[in-house]
Amino acid sequence: MLEEDGAMDADHLVGEEPGSPPQPRGGEGALAATVLEPVRWVRMLCRELGGTFVAGVVLVYGLSQGFAGSFFRVASDYYWKDVQRVQPATVQFLSVFFYVPWVLKPLWGVMTDVFPVHGYRRRPYFLFSATIVAMATGLPVSSAVLCFVGISTAVAIADVTIDACIAKNSIDKPALAPDMQSLCAFSSSLGALIGYATSGMFVHHLGAQGALGVMAIPPATVVFLGFFIYELKTYHHNNVKEKVLNKVSGAVKGMVRTIKYPVVWKPSLYMFLSLALSISTHEGQFYWYTSKTPPNPGFSQEFVGLVHAIGAVASMVGVLIYHKCLKNYPFRSILFYAQLLYGVSGLLDLTFVLRWNLALGVPDAVFVTLEECVSRVVGRVRLMPMMVLSTKLCPPGVEGTFFALLMCIDSLGMLTAKAGGAAVLRALHVTRTDFGHLWLAVLLRNVLRLATLGAIFLVPTADQTDVLVPRELLTSSPAAVADDEEERLQLAMLTSHTDDV
Image (cartoon, rainbow, N blue to C red; front, top):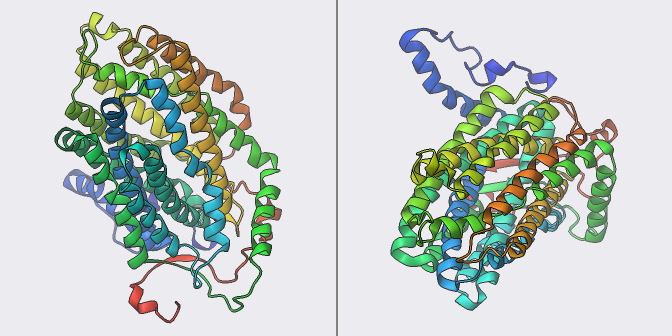
């Protein structure tokens, strides 16, 4: 499962430590081994990838993306609905702007790859993103869109720093790429569980706007902890007058050269299409199921947060299903069946909107909880192999920049899905009070999800542990960011490295 000089089988990676006595397999011993298996798995990741890399993933994905992202979703939905009182199609359109910082991830990748500050590529950008958050929370309500864009930018910058490390480790230890994505997904789902479980309560007691102010704290905490505790250590410049333009040019040339390979652009195109064609009808559905006008469900703020929290638990189940059963399947096979299930599971939304669940005798609360669990499990199983595939396409030397480019493509897909959903909701005249054609929007979304299967031939048939980057890219590193010293995420107190700064 690792490189040749440190190979071990999959059972060993999540099982016993090297040299440890055999573990009992029956009765209480088997139960203890099952309980301790996640601990052994995390210890293995710490040993192979570094303890601070694991901690960095937990901080960024768990606290900044998981907790803050889930909290933001509930609070912002109620903010636009109850405070700004805008139409669902308008909210869908405004949410397009929130994806702009993620589309610009290649810019943040270039910044962190080729613009080191005092010899550090990434640590200062944590501080920069925290400053953005602090500024955004102080803006007036009339500047809400700019506030949300600022928060999104902060999270995106923090995200690109850890993604660069994930891409780097996926190149060095390709067999551990699925395990790294499992760690990311589990951390994100655990953070989302806490965020969703508390968001409804905060929105109810503080209001949507007050809850948004609380939500900005976790990203700021992450980036400041990253600044004072975690050090993304790289080489110190011997020649401080090195021409930056040459470095930028080298990074861009490396990106362009890589994306031209069919093994890279074909799966990238598939990932874009799978996201773009799944148009978002979230705002229309949210306005519908929180409307107090009969026969709409009229869910409360606390219940909405609770359902999403249960969905976060289901997302963790999806992570376990992928990690234990699916990570050894070829990319094309797992993505085909995951996309098929994604389209079919969307019929639950259609059943709910048409109120067929009541005809079947299933209460709204029970059905929406079931629908949320199914969609989260399927969504997680669909997303994780795509993330693994993305890390497999990054060449060494510009892994931060190129992975950011791939995430930019994905963000463009989600931006397109949001914009497409806004257009559909507006065309079908779905408003704050009129949901008569909402079911048509959901049906069209499901048809487009299934239509994505026609592009599955773009996905390679390779296994998830295979190296996909062409050999010539592995043996040549762009001069823009070439470095003899391997970049690692090292745990170090700020005060103990004053000589490096």
